[in-house]
Image (cartoon, rainbow, N blue to C red; front, side, top):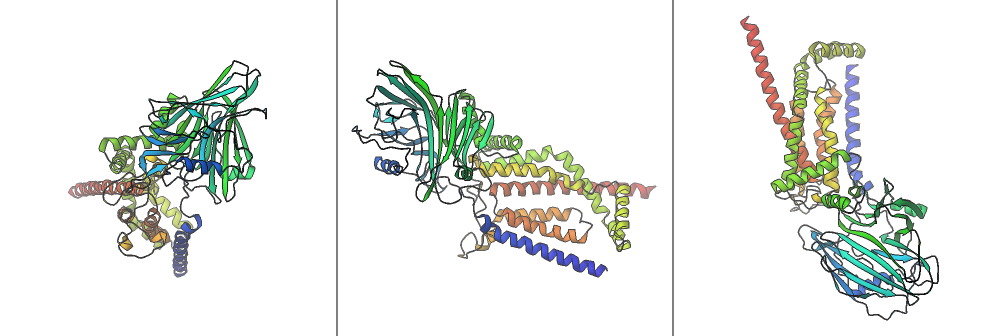
Length: 572
């Protein structure tokens, strides 16, 4: 019977290993890499390119070409401390913003363009229920008082509909990523008109799934004290999704970048998310509309909105939340369900990074602090593990004695645990406590821009991506094409070795089959962690090393205590 049990255990082990290996092999092919629709190239947007992009929208009934404009097209240059770009006086759409502080790749000087080279823009405009009222659109040519927009030099643009309405737009920019847009209309005619201010964001994506795995990517808004993540697929399915709100914000978020409108605080408006396909691409429109207001002759109406175009830096988001009275603007970062851990952890790592000058060292310092906080609890657990190790011979004796009677074996083992005052689950407690921290740190490393292209030492130039030095090809020196699951870097191997050492220092499981599974755990984790951000692997490795040192010290201390007690007993 015992031989049959061993055969069954071996069979189960082989099945388990084969299934695990199969999952590792097919996982990248099923889910694929994370589809990040973040722009990857800087767009050198001239007036000609601007016209081509706008002309590409001419097939949509919502946009009518105005051929009566004879005002020359000019280009307003954006010159702010952290962003650059251009705005064409034809249409006044924002579709060219480059971030001066962010490179497309760490070893290239090319800067990130938020809008990229696809059809993607933001604008503010006016709406009216009276079809005969001529309103400015993206084909209207505006007059400008200047050609450079900077924090010290706002620009004012005007457009006359020649029906008694004079429209003006004042655009300001701050030191970071926020444009302030004030739309004004003056009625110099003889008839009243009802107008409502509107803001629009339009984006086209290829006809493929634009969702991303591991973080939220797409249309987003905060309406009436609730965060709403309106996925591209939902808009495509429902065609039109509407929200009403007082205050709040809305926009489109990528992994690291954001385009979002922030209406005036406490203003009431509606937001529509609409699906608007165009030829080979999927088009998505986010359109806000305030309540209509009657503008009588000689009356002037103004509406102000803020437009955020830039990087999702937590400190800046929190600053704008307070400065502009924007509720929960930090939620544009996908902190996940562990928000209570993730956001403080991001702040802590950012602070330690500024303190020590290196994000990787900041992660190590935070790991050390967490270990110190959990030190007393970990001590108790490691001592419990040592007791489990001490009673291993007695457990094996019970297994031999009751090998044919599992019920009596369970009773005998429970009695042994009670007699020796051992908790078999006590050694698992530090691991359980680490998992929430691990998940929170994973989120921080994976979605926060503070980690993007943050270097450590040596070959680690970006803590937010996997270790780029595959050991099997000597860092790419050997031109050997490998499947994704075999591209294992140095840090994952060190991490796996640390897990193996830590496992050997603890007690072996009483169940032989379980013991064999545990032997595979370091190998499995090495394969899994090889595809995770290197910063996470470094954290886990350093945490294991600290645990090994702590466990070693406790073992030596317990051995001395046992020797002391034995010496006392012998002397008696």
